[in-house]
Length: 355
Ligand code: MG
Image (tube, rainbow, N blue to C red; front, side, top):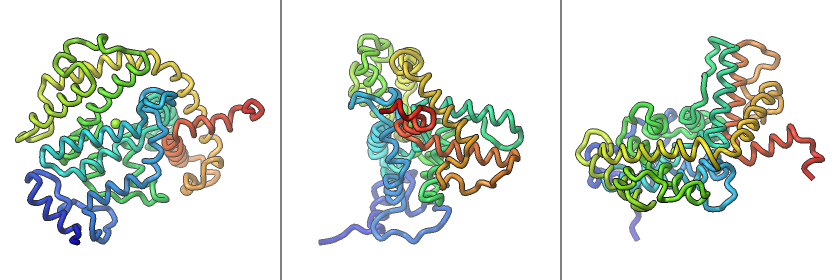
């Protein structure tokens, strides 16, 4: 019986992938160097590190769009992440790019999301901007950004504060997945677009399941271009991305398919994200996050010990407030929906009400 070693995979990558792919044996490397694994390439190892981290497991109990979904068939952050990984890998494989790197970026791209979807993100942003206004010059960010938080998780928070020590290419892909600047690797660029393909399609699917939308209500222009059902639309977008990116400098869609996708996305904002079913519980979710933030800011002693390491007791300086605000942000952003609700109940609801 023969075995595949890391060197075998590296040789295979050199013969199978296109010249502009990211090759695992020429990664820019990690902040702390590691001895190489006998069987896994550097990107395979990063993919595995992400799957084993705590923040990845918590994605299964974080809202994508529909809050704390009661139906078992709605997407969560975890199933969204897996759909992005599937779409991104299909595109990478067809373009002869590095599937392992693509998968590692896709699986980690949303690790920094707050509980309660974008409402949680909005609430944290508001809390931070209020403190930033009170402590000018202390370096407090004026808003919460989930891709910055995803990077904090893999670089600083996971693995008891040591971080996952991922390769530069994975961290670059995480940083740029929202389209803020372009990822340096073609694999990172694939994930940025695959993220949109996944959410535009699955949010339509979830909205239909939730009775918020039906197929005939979708705008005709985009569906004539993309297809008249879930599977057809994904296939059009993926095929178009492969064909439009083949031989191009960057990963892209054709203007026609891109515009159709963006039109559907805008339709989702108007019909689903900013009104109706998905919004019904938003004020409550918002209140939970704000209340928790305020509480931990006033009672840092209630933070778990791993979030208190850098505390200087009694310090009232703007710098100390900035550090505290960061720790509270890290703690709350890491919570799942149900954990945040449980903490809110424990802190603000008289216990007799719970029986
Ligand atoms: Mg995403």
